[in-house]
Amino acid sequence: MQFIDLAAQQRRIRDGIEERIRRVLDHGQYVMGPEVRELEERLADYVGVKHALSCASGTDALLLALMARGVGPGDAILTTPFTFMATAEVIALLGAVPVFVDIEPMTFNLDPACLERAVTALRSRNAALSPLPRPALESPLRPRGIIAVDLFGVPAEYDAIQAVADQHDLFVIQDAAQSFGAERYGQKACGMTSIGCTSFFPAKPLGAYGDGGMCFTDDAGLDDCMRSLRIHGQGHDKYDNVRIGINGRLDTIQAAILLVKLGIFTEEVELRQEAAQRYTDLILRHGAPVEPPRLPEGIVSAWAQYSVLARDGAHRAELLNRLKEASIPSAIYYPKPLHLQTAFKELGHEPGTFPVSESCARRIFSLPMHPYLTAPDQEKVIKALARH
Ligand SMILES: *Cc1c(COP(=O)(O)O)cnc(C)c1O
Image 1 (tube, rainbow, N blue to C red):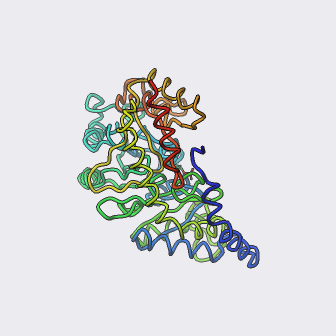
Image 2: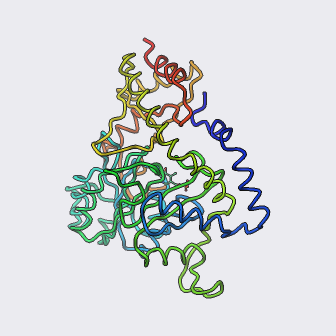
């Protein structure tokens, strides 16, 4: 059994992939070839936004979004500590300070109530209201924006997050690296805030055969700026540079591969819904000793992961061992919240600072999840967990 079975998917689409790659080899435009624009147009339509701009990774998508917002030293960006490194890394890379905000325990996403307190704490430099990073206590930081993450494929609570943002004049970026294909009250992920960012890393819901990413926006000005930033801050022609940018393009071959995968993507999102529902039914039927994921109203998850909670750290170790003995792969996303990572030690956060994130980091683990998971395999997984 595979944790994510990319080979099963490849068997379905191999001929189409070979044909599309052959066309790229024939025309030879390996950088910014016609497939790149075609993919951008198809994905803008899919999400329902005006502009989609491809780039080299999900990390670059977040970086371009922050750069287009002019984020730099002296700025504070609020985000969750329970996410992949890239979310907060891009903030620090630009010289700004990540201000972490604890999560809501049902969805593992940014808790809007904590977010409101954190903005107030930051403005008044009062860490009694909400934990603040050391740089925010040493000198005033300007709260500029929020990066909300749709962890495991579940869109964050954007109405409440946007309300806090509007009240304090902050922008919101959606880190939809795990939620491409998800919906919130009918709106597709990547279209829920001023800029949506996603990743095409192979294991993500829509994955390439290498790195890739995309930014989505309805704002023509932001789109123009990110297009320029993506190619060394270029102006009207190749050797006119109007700002400092990056080399952040998506390869034509990856765009070609993604166009083929897009052809089966809607069906795959549907298959993920069925697999997730089967897991939840099996957990209840077999009395497996874990908390299955629960979705808020109005949400369709992209089910990047099917993550469950054990009672505590020792219980998780025991359950992971049961899976291992049955040769079932599993993973822990994420064992260490970002505020406790060595890379962020300058922020001065101690264990206990964000208790919900830390408790989830001790208890959470993910089961094999992909569109081609079979019912008998899922039964095997849950029976292994339920063994007494
Ligand atoms: C994967 C991921 C990223 C980064 O995407 P890459 O394409 O690997 O650079 C950012 N945020 C989250 C939440 C992710 O899961």
